[in-house]
Length: 281
Image (cartoon, rainbow, N blue to C red; front, top):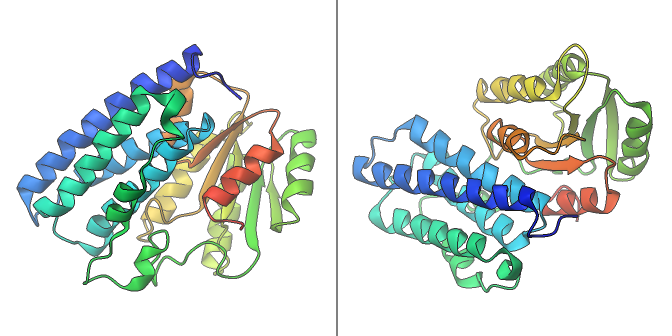
């Protein structure tokens, strides 16, 4: 969709290096603090990685996205299980950040780089953790997507043509519900969650009346966090919009959307992202 020498991509790469530098600084601080975990530092690291991953998916930088995903899961072990950030654990995470920096410096060859050894190190289980944690970070309290079979999908879109396109395509993969603006989306999400039938995927437009998509995402993530569910274990959220400014894109990722699709939505890319997040196989 984009050429790697376009300004939009270059801005993403510069921004990503800044995010990774900040994450590295926080990791070193966490290592020195030992078991006295600073929740805000962990949150900043997760948001930084989320931004890098989201942009890499937007620009089809698959190796970067997969390495970030593994790094997020490794940090989740520390965050959710209160595992001490020992020197050995932090060392692996720092090597992952160094490798991500290398890949970002050479985006045109990054998809062909060999990252298998580091991916294996990041996935290595701790003896103290349940085996269920090794599949996308799922625990008993945060089941993996699709455990009920077909996924539950909420399409939040005020444009009729786009709404029909998404619903027609996504209906083959799961049960689809529709909201016409952000306010309806938040209400539908809360109702579904309370009834025990949470949404696995939310396709969220940004520009909508009454409540825009970014505010809806903020409220949905706040609702999840209030119930102990934090990234990357909440609903998977794909933002859809015609807005292409890189700062807008990155702000969406900081607010913990998972991927970004430009309109008109490419259904092949939508399916590819669903597979990446293991919503379909």
